Length: 116
Image 1: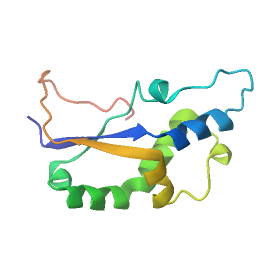
Image 2: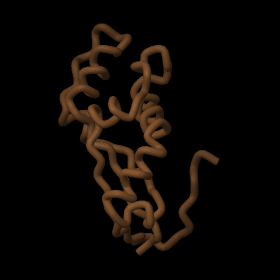
Image 3: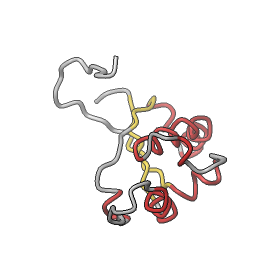
C-alpha cells in the first residue's frame, strides 16, 4: 500500500448540463451523465487528509478551486466558457466526492510525472 488516498469527482446533472450548453460546437451530440462519468481523473492526496470525513471535507474546501478549474479545463480550455464565480457551493452542486483510502501499487516501479 502507498501513503496516499484517491479522490475522484463524480459529475452530477448540473455539471453535465453546463458541459452540453457551453459546447462551442453546435453540431456535437449531447453527453449523458453516464458518459461523462465513464472516465474520471484520480487525484492522489495525503492519506491523513482522508482519515475522517471532517478531514476530507477540510481538504476539499481548501482545494476545491484548483480541482474545479482542472475539471473545467478538461472540457473546455477557454476560461471564458466557464461559469462564474467558481464557488464551493457550485462545486458541491456539480460534484459528488469519492475517496478511497487504501491504494495498492501493484507495479512497484517509480511513479513518474509525465508533465514534468
